[in-house]
Image (cartoon, rainbow, N blue to C red; front, side):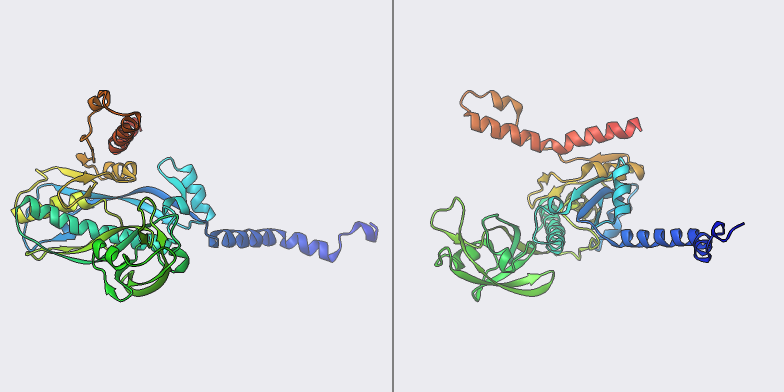
Length: 356
C-alpha cells in the first residue's frame, strides 16, 4: 500500500473526535438558543385556587365548598424552545410584547400598571362588599394613576410611564383627577410641567411638555387616560394576599369571599365555584381577558360551576328603534358584541373541553 493511500495523522484524529466535536457544537448552539430571549408573551391556563386563604377578615367561616379565583399563566421574553412549545400546544397562544402590553413604554411599566389594577380591584372589592352589607367604610384619595398614554402625548419621551402615580404638579398636591386638571389650568400647550409621585412604590420625577388635549378645546394636559387612586380602609381587619398576581380580574371572587366571611354565610353552598370578573365600587361586574385559559384551569381543578361576566344591560330590541341614527345603531351593536364577548368565548371553550 502506497503512502498516499494511508490517511494522514490529522484525518485520523478528526475522525476519532468527530462525534465529540459535533456534540460540542450542538451544546454550544443549544446554550446560545436557550439564552436568547424574544419580544413575545406566551399565554396559557393558569391556576384555580381557593380565595379563602388569601382573604382575612378576622372572622371564621366554615366553608363546605370553596370559591376559586382563576388566573392566566403568562411568560414574557421566551427563548426559542418555549416559543416552539407554545406554538405546538393547542392550549397556548403567542402575542408580540407590544400587543400584549397595549403599547406600554416598557414591560416594567406594564407590570406596574397590572399591580395597580390588582390593588384597585382589592379596593373596589371592599367598597362593593361593604356597600351590599350597608356598612360604612373609609375612603381617601392618594393620587392620579397614568393608565394609558395617548398617542399624541410627548410625556413618554420625557420619562413618564404607565403605572406611575402622580401626587403633585409643579409642587401643587394632586391627589385626584380634578385637582390635577386644576393644577394645569393656567398652562397652555407647549409649556412644561414637573410631575412627582411614585413608580412601583419608589419616588419618581419627570418634567414633561404639555399638549392640546384631543377633543377638549383650549385645555392643555399631559396626555393620558387617568384615574384617581383610592385608599380604602374597612372597619374590620381585612387583609389580602394577592401580591403574586396582577390585573383586576379577581375582583368579583374577592368581593364574594369578603361578604361570605363577614356575614358568616357560606356562599359556596358546598360546591367548588370558580369565577372571574372585575368589580366596580357599586358592585358592577366587568369583562376580563383570557377567560378561555381560566376555564381550562377551573376544569383541571374539577370546579362544579364557573361565574362568567355577562352584560345584558343593552337589549337587541332597541336596535329596531326608528329614532336611532346609523351611528347610534352601530355603536349599540358594538357594545352588545363586546359586552357578550366573555360569555360567547366561554361557551366555545366549554364545548371544546367537552369534546376533548
